[in-house]
Structure formats: structure tokens, C-alpha cells
Length: 94
Image: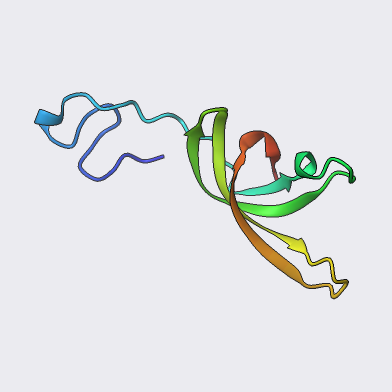
């Protein structure tokens, strides 16, 4: 995660800003497998290909803004796209 223009990790944009918060080292892995098993515990493990768009620190740990696809249930073979914030524990590197 890069600091905004005009800032450095731990320092404000101007001298008057004083000390800022330290920018953490953000987990990487842009391409992941999204595991939705906990959302549908009655089914077998559900993993879909996904792409991480960004990270944030949530109450329960790191969360990723992820887009992924899953097949439609109509048997057509088409897929649908999803976008959501998911916990890091729901992702594994692809």
C-alpha cells in the first residue's frame, strides 16, 4: 500500500499535520480462490476464481475487496460476477 502523494509512511502531508499513522504492510496475491463454504455449509466446498481489488483492516482482521465469478444455477453454463468485501480467511492464492 503506497502512501498518498505528498506523504511518507508515518508522516503527514505538511509539517503542521505532525505524525500520521504508520502504513501497514498489506497482504498481496491479486489472483485468489474465493471460498464461500461458510456461507453455504450444507454444500461441498465452494471455491471460485477471484481478483483482489484492494485491502482494508477490518474489526476481525484483513478484508479484501474481491470480484469473482460463479456459475448460474439455471444450467446454461453462463456465469455471474460478484463484488464484495471478504475476510482474508476466505481467500487462498491462485
